[in-house]
Image (cartoon, rainbow, N blue to C red; front, side, top):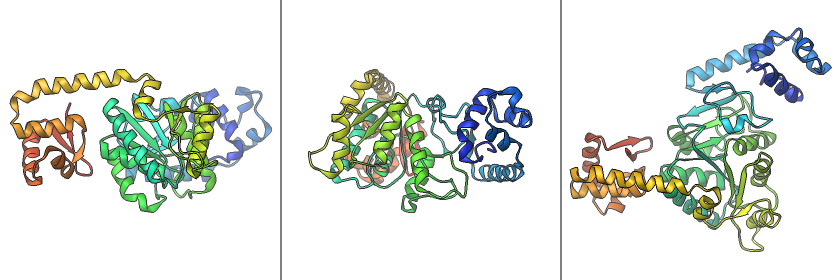
Length: 367
């Protein structure tokens, strides 16, 4: 944490130090003789390491206490929970603060980004894409920035269809911006998580959003741009993703539409592959095998469970097989049963060990 708090002017040097010596502890041990370890160390680096860092140490201790009090993990590149994909990026943060339960090294990780002024067209695209992707690839972690527009639509669609979703923040975990997304963020902590490189007390300054974008890009397999004006944060994330060697995709829009211009330009300039559906994306990523595994799992569940279920219980299971993790109202609608009856059936299924409840009143079919 002390290294991470050093003046940003020395950030590149700090990364070199960390990767050369292998740990922050080793760096601190060689503060006084750094040139013996790294002969090419710059004068400014030598000076920075010899300076009094007691204030930084006290600040790091305060942060550790805060993390312990609120169940926050402080992840370094040496920790197993640190995003492996991000670790391989040259400018990966030395410390990440994480509150949540999702595996940041999930088998598939996709980020969905775009304008803060998402249109109805964009909202429909996001919801349809996420739900169709869930059917084809059940184990995908959805990442975005919890901002207005595309970001929050992506998080909410993920939560609704049963995906875990992680929001990468441009400030510390002691605050939330924008505050109106607090309820969604709280749900994400139980079905995904919140991630940041910034310590508590850090404001959501403009430059922090740009820095945040590299984490969104670096921890993902692919970047999907839904809507964007000619300039915007989504385009920055797409550009960073491309520089990391990640796959970049964009949904096209109508010529002349303000918030389709960025996507159309990116596709035109070969900066992103054009997609119109989740099927396009799955095919481009060669993830079709996920759908076959999901189908086999579904068929296996049906063979094993259906002989022991009543017709009404089977109706509930059928709905959850098609779209797992639903709230009771949606379950009742799709199963064609009264809510009070569905509540009783869910209790029976829980007693049989087939269903469990998740945060937010969601019901999950155990596979």
